[in-house]
Length: 140
Length: 92
Image (cartoon, rainbow over all chains, first blue to last red; front, side, top):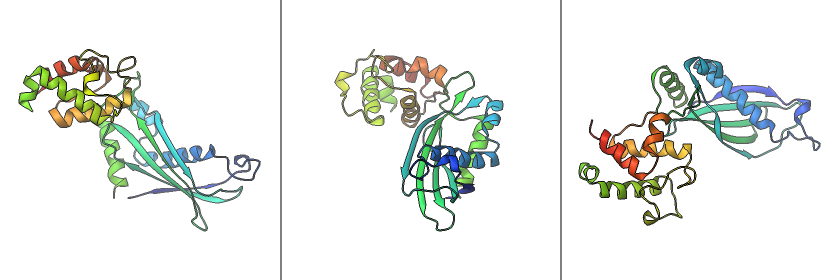
C-alpha cells in the first residue's frame, strides 16, 4: 500500500492545558494529509465541484495511541482504499518524525453527491477516471 | 435467478432476505417486513448509506444497475417497488 507523507509541526495553539495536543486537531491533520493526496490526482474539493460533485464525510474513526507536544515534528501518512460501495475511504497514520512513535491511526469515509445534493450510486466519466488513478496509485 | 425474477412472490422473499443479510439487520425477520413497508425513514429506517450497499447487492445478484438517487428513490420505496423495478430491468 502506497502512502503519501506530509510534515507538520505541532503549534502552541494546538495543545491543551495538560501540554498534549487536543484530540480534535488530529482531524485537521487528517484533512492536511487528504489534501496532499487529492492534489496529485486533481481531486481537490474545488476540482470536484468543477466536475459537479461534492464528497461529504459520513464516517470518522480515530484511535489515539500516544500524546504529542508543542514543537513536535509529525508525519501524516495518508492512503485511499477501494470500498465496495460508491464512496471514498481514506486511512491515516500520524507519527513523530524522529522516533517514529505512532500517535494516532484514523479512517474517514465520504459519499459522493452531485452539486445539487443527489447521491450517486456508481462512479462514471471523468470522476471515475480520477478516482481510479488515485486508487491505483494507493494500491501499488 | 431468472426463475426467481419471474415469480413475484419468490422475488419479494429473496429481496427481504437480501436486505436483512446485506445490512445485517439482526433484529428484523423476513415475516416482519411488509411488501409495502417503506424502506427508508419511518418504515425500515434505512438511510442513504444503506442504499449504497443495497445497490451493490442488487448489481451482484441481478446485474441490474441503479445509477443514482433519482432512480433509487422510486426503486427503494418498498419491497414491491424494488421487485417491480428489478423485473423491468432484468436481462436488458
